[in-house]
Image 1 (cartoon, rainbow, N blue to C red):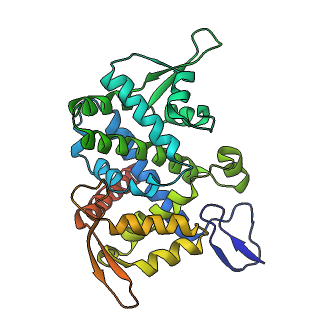
Image 2 (image 1 turned 180 degrees about the vertical axis):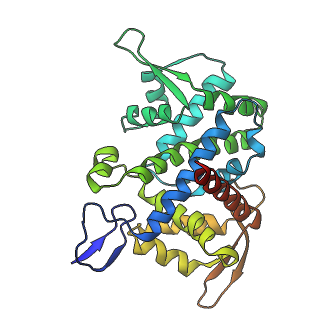
Image 3 (image 1 turned 45 degrees about the vertical axis):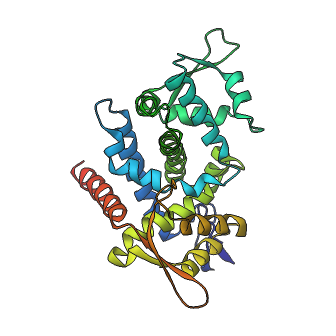
Amino acid sequence: MPVRCIKCGVTSGRRSNVDYETFICDECKQHEQVVISLYETAKETFLDPSAPIEASDIYEILKQTYFIIQKNPKLSVYAAIVKELLEAFAIQNLTEIDYDELWRRTRSRRNILKVLKSMEDAEILKLESPDRISRVVKPGPVLENFAKVYRVYKAKEQAKTRVASVLTMYAILHELYVLAKLKTKTEIENTFGVHSPKAPWVATMFLWTTRLTKGEEGRHFTEDEFRKFLAKRGLSTTTISNYISALKAINPNSVQQFIENIQPTGNNGVEFIVREDLIRALERIHASRVRENARD
C-alpha cells in the first residue's frame, strides 16, 4: 500500500516497515528546517524594539509571500484579526479590546480563540481574563513594534496594507513552525483539527525550500512545474489557480513582488523568474541559523 506524507500529503511508492502514523517525506524534512530558521529569525527580529523591522530580510520575504494566503477563505480570519488589532492599538490608541467585540469586528464564523492563542504564543498579543468571565486582548511586544510602523503610515492605506500583510504572514509562519515541530499524524490532527495550514505549507515548500535547494537554478520555474507540485500534494484547483494568478500579477503597486520577470514558454505556459535578492535573503537567514545551531 502506498504511504502518504502526514504533512504535505504526497504519496510514495509501496514501502515495507513504514509507520503510516509518522511518515514524513524528505522534502518536508528539509522544509521543517527552513521554516524553523525563518520563524526563529522573524520572532527574534520582531521582538527587538530597536530593530528597523522594515529593513530586515525576513520582513521582505514575508511581505512578498503574502499572496499565498490572500485568497484562502480558511486563513482570511488571520488577516481580519491583524487589521483590527493594528487599527485598535496603532490608530485608535486603545490599550485593550474586548474579545467578543474583536470577534464581532472580524465577522468570522470560526471561533477565533484558538487563533488568538496561537498569536499569543507568537507574542503578537496577550489574552487576559480580569474577572474570569470576560476576556480582553492586549498588544504583545511584536504587535507593539508593528504598531509603531503602522502608525507612521496613518494616512497611507496601501502602506498600512503592506505592514498588516507582513504581520499576518508572521502569524501564519508561526502555524507552519508548529506544524514543523509535530512528528505524528495524531499530533497534527489534535493540534489543528480541520484547520491544518497545509496549503501555505506546500506553497512555501516550493517557493522557499525548493528555491534554496536548487541553488542558482532555483530562480527559474515554470507554471507547469508549480501546478504539478501543488496538485501532487492534493491542493485544490481553485487554490492552485489563485497562486498562479497572483504570481502573474507583477506590478509595482501590488503587495506581491516575489517574481522579477515572466517569460513565455511553449504550450501557452510561462516561466517565472524569482527576484534574486529574495533568494539571497533566504540563503542568508538559513545559513546563519545553521551556523548558530552548529555552535550550540
